[in-house]
Image 1 (tube, rainbow, N blue to C red):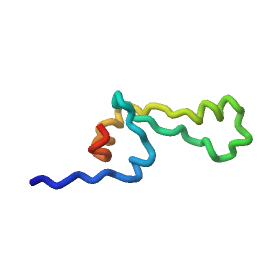
Image 2: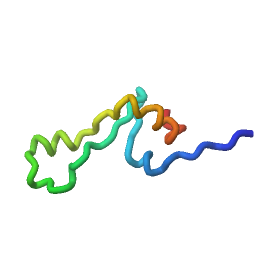
Image 3: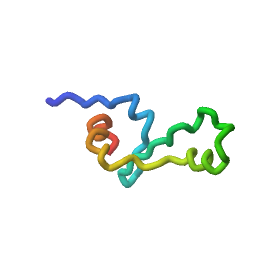
Length: 67
């Protein structure tokens, strides 16, 4: 019998996999020095952004049961 694969807990807390299989992450530099940033940049940074397709292979290894 094969062993279960372990989920990388740090990565599972940082990304979310959508129903269609896209990997969404938070934008960087959102909470640090937020009052100096324009409201437009703060609003756009609050939204998630899709991770690059080049990272998908590595993430499938880190999150084996997410896909």
